[in-house]
Image (cartoon, rainbow, N blue to C red):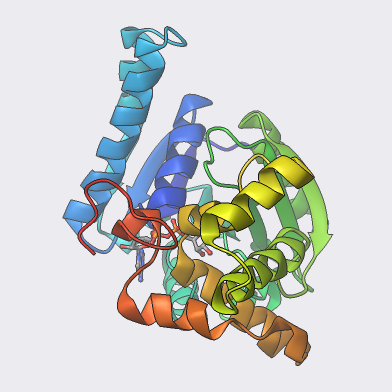
Length: 287
Ligand code: NAI
């Protein structure tokens, strides 16, 4: 299937990264968010990242401008009528995603593929909100999207081979490496990563060590490029909590219980890098 126009739903850290990567690979991109200011902020963050690339002489000003011209913003879901592929990257919440997919199904052309960047939620359940479950699929990018090579491509129970091929080809055209996985909670990446992060939070909660020391054990001792608590702050502690709850619900296994300290941080609004405070404090943070 030929893809010209991609629509990205949600202009946060992942949505803006996906939009940037799609536009950089030559696609026309429409970036949607619920408020104009958030959609614009997403586009601005892309401009800033590209400016850094120009400063590092990885691209020139003309390249940057060409990419920015391919990026339009909108607050109108009806614009889905112009898209060949829609990639949803709104908050990690099943009710929100179901509402979005029902709307997308109503507005998108019949040939359009509806993909979700969910970290852990059931593709099969999201697809069931539409009249085209064969055209719904998971396209799980890693953070930061412009840098990370992997895309987990998740097949829902009813996803067709044609949809899988379209999305695999799209990921490759965005210079990513797609890996096919089946639709079970957390897929592969977060089924393995999140229990490790949650265990690191338990180690803080139980006073085994400090966040700095726990991260040092994992970077220096295990050769991880980033410690689990730094990574949790980077992902967003709200997203980490949603994913642990999804694993716990999906497998009904107490080994996935989210750490009470993680819950408390999220209740306090300590969401990590994006809110200025999580396990670490960040410059410019308000909390
Ligand atoms: P974020 O909080 O940075 O951005 C979410 C965006 O969605 C916000 O701009 C918000 O205004 C928008 N939004 C909220 N309700 C909406 C609605 N009804 N319609 C459209 N937009 C809406 O979150 P982030 O980190 O970008 O995560 C987005 C998705 O990507 C989640 O499903 C998350 O699980 C997934 N993801 C996150 C990763 C991470 O490292 N943060 C990695 C891979 C996937």
